[in-house]
Image 1: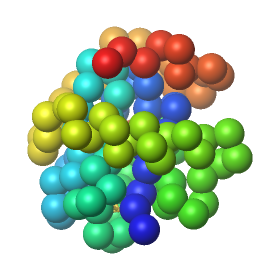
Image 2: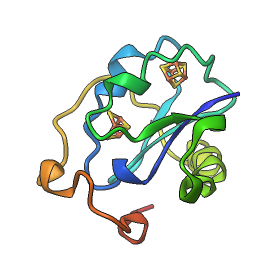
Image 3: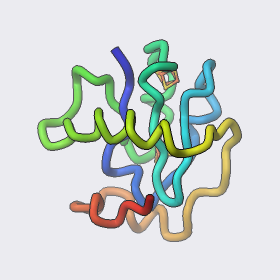
Length: 107
Ligand code: SF4
Ligand code: F3S
């Protein structure tokens, strides 16, 4: 199993998740983070840390978020590892909870 970053991370990128991951499985893009499913050890630590509630266990994903399983796997191969917390994106609080953010994803 793996944990998965879902849509509400887009344009927020709070990065609190990065601080607790014991195996450095987060990868960073311009406005979204993903988890490398081959590295995640299912420790559960990141899930409660996300202020945007964007992280779910693979088998507990909300119905419309299932495509993020493959998206995390795909983008983890392309984006660099992030290991340190950063300042959230500008307007992160405004974007937190907005619907239909997938079209805002920058690759
Ligand atoms: Fe990292 Fe644990 Fe979250 Fe997996 S569940 S991404 S190992 S903190
Ligand atoms: Fe994204 Fe939440 Fe981490 S917004 S960067 S998954 S803390």
